[in-house]
Length: 227
Figure 1 (tube, one colour):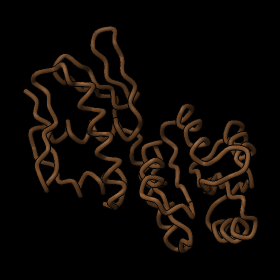
Figure 2 (cartoon, rainbow, N blue to C red):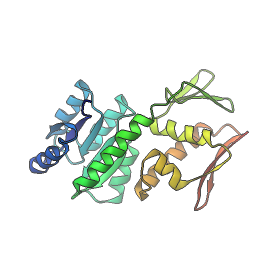
Figure 3 (cartoon, rainbow, N blue to C red):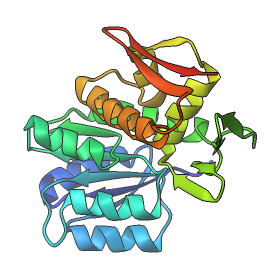
């Protein structure tokens, strides 16, 4: 069985060498020391997961992630950074990253995160082509889109997974922790903030549909109400 291929962009050559060397026991690692070369590699090769430092020469990690998400909504992205500000972590998650680890990090934690996201990435390849009717909308989980007549709204992979989870459990309270573990494999506070962003996005899509609403259950979770 071939190894999963990881794009790793880190400009600290010592840290980069040590991390890449450790990961190469399990994965095929392509290590780059500046943002532009890392992004060029992404555009010209196939990877299973991306690990990005935030502060990079030529093109920072946030910009790389933004460009990656324009081309691929599914590939897991992990940020590594010495920047500890809450705003930086939230920004990274809002850009579509799967996690944000603060340096210094342990290799054991990084490896565990990689395994969680690679496994989740395989599981979220939906197993059937069934579409869902929700009010006057049609939801296609395979192609990550919601349509109403000729109007179509594209979703990210995780937004589609979240909506599918709600529809599979409609009119039922879903605990916040369950949603986070299902979609992210962790119930970390900062990932929870990212969930709130996705909930807000789904609410905007269905805001003109009177019989569809995502209800907040204080200190518990959420419930999709639909007739």
